[in-house]
Image 1: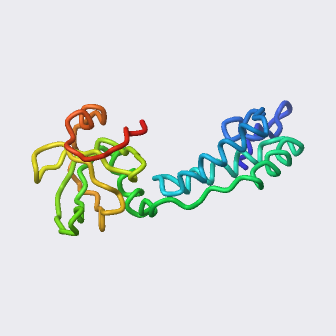
Image 2 (image 1 turned 45 degrees about the vertical axis):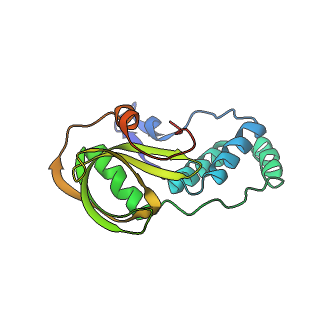
Length: 183
């Protein structure tokens, strides 16, 4: 934990306020709901970040509430869903989204045909069919949705792009998703 120090007669030591959490007053049911939601979305992008956040939440809860939440969670089961999101790919896409750069993808379509294309990422969205990258595809010169589990490789380019609105991309993306996106 980072410590702040002030020398001199009125000095002293203290914990860095920016690194501490205020008291969390989640009820056991609220904590169980968060744990259950994270378990139900194991295949989501940023799943590891979700597990880390849950660990921090549990660590900051009062012992009595934490014990009740733990008892409640022990009585809940979430069956595994479809395949994972491909964490290395998600990490690359996260970096590209934050840096506003183009990404080169090696992608397999529904018929397992491989293509290599450069895209301008707009964001990620999820459906019951899986997680997708919404992007402007330079190969097709159109908005597209790419299933994360079909991206074999993703590499950041050095090319800066103008950030695109995920909502604008999704309005025009031609996809066969049967469930509405979760955004």
